[in-house]
Amino acid sequence: MRVALGADHAGIELKSALAAHLKAAGHEVADLGTHGPESVDYPDFARAVATSVARGDADRGLLVCGTGQGMAMSANKVPGVRAAVVADTFSARMTMMHNDARVLCLGARVVGQGLAKDIVDEWMGATFEGGRHASRVAKMEGA
Ligand code: RB5
Image: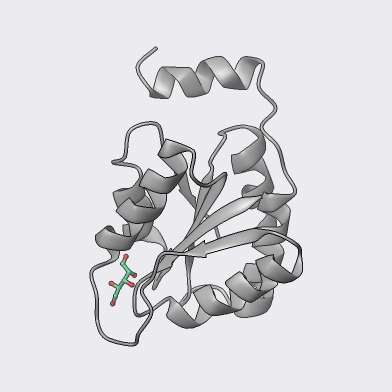
């Protein structure tokens, strides 16, 4: 899959670890920044990644900040994008299967690298179930 990655200064280390993890699993990774340790504004990177997913340039988007919260709030402002903050593997799987959340947000100050990799694996391995979930997701978009 093609995965767009983004982080702010708080998430840059975890982003790098996850980029390497995804590449090792055979995925195509587009790192949309940030690329340095300077303090930056998370909405800029959330918008870049969410827009990439909304346009179809990426199949999935992965965002990391301190808590994941600001990234998710920002990414969810991009029409058609559903971003979820996740800190456990069950929610990671279910938010893909039931909510078609193609953008996953992680908090680098919340989860360690080992758990973050497991969360990403669970989410990447899950697919949207459609059916009754499709009409519910459509209602989010105003259907
Ligand atoms: C940066 O200090 C922090 O506010 C940011 O990474 C994120 O946690 C916001 O939601």
